[in-house]
Length: 81
Image 1 (cartoon, rainbow, N blue to C red):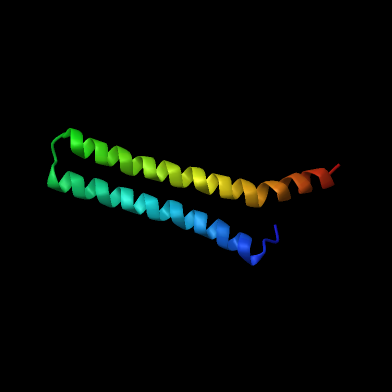
Image 2 (image 1 turned 60 degrees about the vertical axis):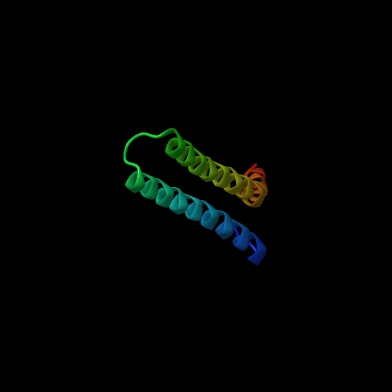
């Protein structure tokens, strides 16, 4: 796709953002389970918020991917005509 340095940085940053969010989510869940193994509304809310942060990171990464790759894909498809 011949990305320039800025586009590589955006794409890799988006991937890193999702990976970091997922790692933090896993850490929060493991810590919460270790501290309070039984169900607890506060623990459940913290886990839900951490999962929501992962979802937000994924949505941002998808938007970055669309901005970086979609114009190239459309151009490539048009060149096939």
